[in-house]
Length: 301
Image 1 (cartoon, rainbow, N blue to C red):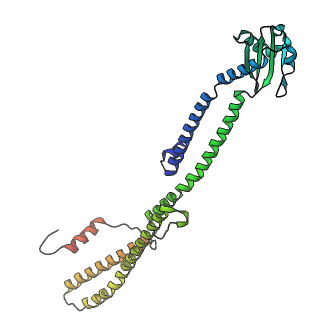
Image 2: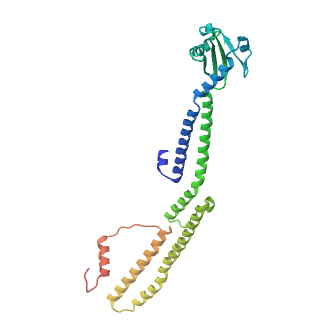
């Protein structure tokens, strides 16, 4: 994965940018939620409302209060040490120590609250209400993770679609670099400005292909056209009575034929029609022959 990102391809860079931007967005979202979802304002508001609900009411009135199907419990002062009310012990201690006699704390996925009534020295407990911040945060984090995964998935396919023309262009350049001038970029796999670029690239390859084919046909035609006058020269050199001159002309004719054969052989090899054959030669004899062909009476080589 690291090697893929370090390749700095268009696809990997766009995807890396998406991952980084999404991570930054999530970080900002979490920090913002942490600030907004501070427990203190919620606790303060709940304590104030609960205080107004239970204060200045008799035990009979409190017993009739029902909040979302949950009844208030009026506990005696001894409940703070009673094992029967062990689940409320910490809450009761908090209410007893609180300046306003009100306390609340998380209880599983919900909250519970208690009030200490100074006039009767008893406790009023609301066993369950609302949803705790932790459970809401977990649910919110789940939605955030799901949204991030969905965004990454959408970005993955959208970036793949956006960079597909680059892949086609790169494939076309690779074919041209390998000498395959007959390849054409499929325009249906491109769009917009990329299609214009791909069409221009295809036209350029077509022109280069025509030039290459014209050059190839010309090179292949030259040996056949030149061999006819060479054949006539071979016949006419036999009419020369000077043996040394006749042999010199014959050597020139053989050299021209060798050059023509080399041109034809090279072109066929480049087009894939010929087979390369290797053979050993004597370098001293080879260069002596070249020197002898270029030697004249006025200058020594």
